Image (cartoon, rainbow, N blue to C red; front, side):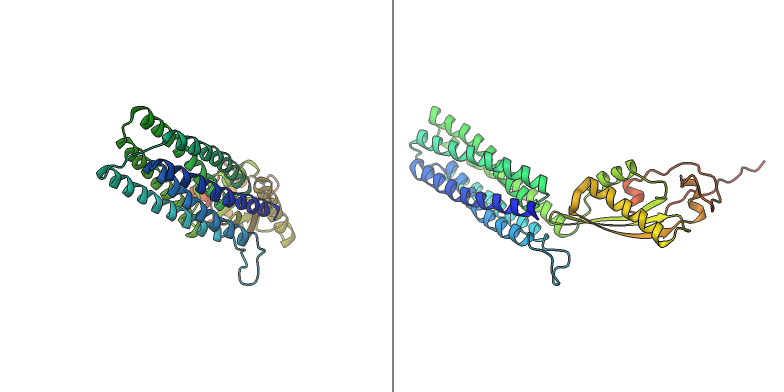
Length: 335
């Protein structure tokens, strides 16, 4: 729970800083009348609103599970990220529209030197806060905080490019470049919003995370015990930072309940060594069949019917299958 409180505290700072930076950018826009700076200010409104949603979602995700939410409240982080991605996309569309309007109806730009200084200060603060948020979000496995961090870093990078454009306009006096720069960064923001929205929808729909599955399968292959004849029907569902993992573990059929439970405990311990206490593991045990003897490496087996031939490495394809694995007996060629 400590990680959840850390996430909440940092998100609270993100909201407060976002409000301050929005005010700074509005002042810069009012001084310069630059549509490029206006696009940056519009994105800051998204920062503030999404930070508020993120703060609420992290507060809710930190609450303990209850009778109405037996799996906890972590799913709300995906909803928060979806709202943030949508708002970013809307802001990107507004930036592009305003840039097109400014290309058609040209307006003067003034006091760019003052605007450049204010925007540079805001961009630097955004970069620091965004980097901290993304690092903590990755460490604490919080999609809401990581999305906020990525958004702020994207904002900082776009601000850096915006500064380059503003400096070019200031040096050359080509006012039409203001609208071109605004349009370019509107497109970048639109793409960022789509990526965040796509990732959040994947979490809401419990889309299989192949990268996470492959990482877990590699870990199990490395720490495999002899009595783990087979693992299949592996599933991972994410509830915010919590991973719910369920699978079928095949053990020797003659194991009693205590022996089977010992192997399940060993599997759970191995997974928790890799992912910590954020894992909930549900394991169904199956008894082995004679057809599995050829892939079973258990040295002392009183019931072995076929000699061991080769160990089947677990892969993404065979582990997510709902069928127990085996090596079929070799057929003798007819002479």
